[in-house]
Image (tube, rainbow, N blue to C red; front, side, top):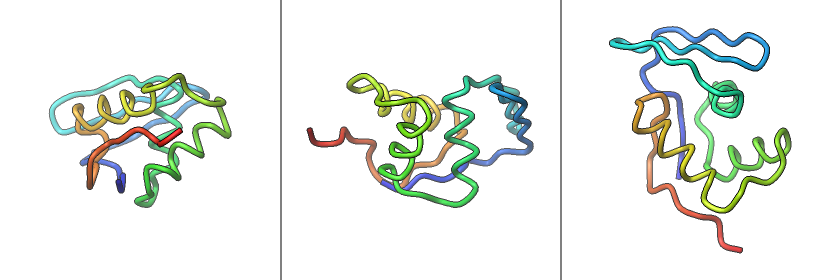
Length: 89
């Protein structure tokens, strides 16, 4: 899976908070979601994003990474080329 930022009009990151302006709405994101967007300055693989988050926050509970990415895709904050899938144990 390849991930990249969605059609974001503007992005403001301050400390551990993030506000994203889309065409039709403004979203306040968690520090974890903010870390995803900051890392996606360029398109990256899902494994790279997972590794980046684990280096900052530690391992996520089972299924949480996939849930986070799915939520960001559903909100049009992130675009995914390929299915969001669990990493094999």
